[in-house]
Length: 346
Image (tube, rainbow, N blue to C red; front, top):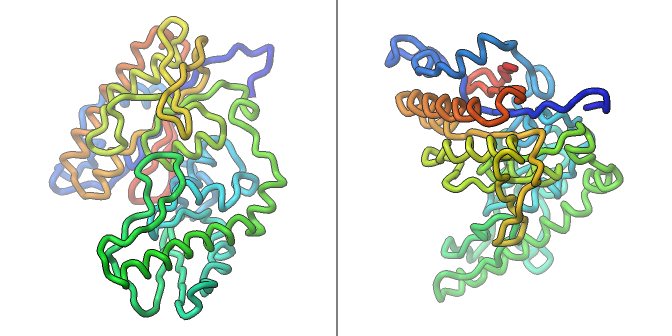
């Protein structure tokens, strides 16, 4: 927390997801990070503090939502409820849930009965991290139905429709639509949500005394930012995957932290197609999430990971040349791929 006696320093918090790895024969038994030419990262690491941290607790391999809430300084027992985390992000049968309470959440869903279709069996199983799987067993089911995904952020789930003229497809669409409604009804009344509604989660600004912004094309991270009243900045070309335009993300964060010396970027407005202007005086805290490195690690694309790391390093060089670079305090949080712990360099 910043006190009136302490002047604010603008903070660039850069999270390079999946930077850690193992030594690989293809790279001369170096890790991708060791093989990459990253002079900016090397300079910051050599002048900073390096170490290991457990975002939540020792031995807990938490998912993206849990880890990021912790890294942003929130006690996970006092954050948003289950349904609040779930509802914007349920796509087909992939469900996002709070890892610390997974058994409590799944218990009322597993074995649930659909009022209009009591002959169908619904099973829900915990998968990994914050995900679960849903299986519906019964007669006259078809895979020829549309998706519930609206393909646009902050929109309600779509109604499922039959993709052909068969009775099976129309019937399956009706079953899935009722299942979606029943899952939402159960989660809204879940005791964990009732408890969360009684607890006021402070905004990031109230908690830390810093005006925050974020560049995070990965939507679950952006959703967490919105729940903490963090402004989500518009970064043209930022996709959250291999194709992402890192230079655009770095430029946007640099402008947000440099305003009013540089024009402040626009801010995403939930549920709207138009953006609104950012804070004229700029922001005190800029969170930059980089996902492409983690994608390369998951795909075991070692050469691509090296090249992507070098691109990340160049984008960090852009931040170092920002008009207020001398007033920016650098923070790095790196989530290693193999050891499920966080390497923190500040």
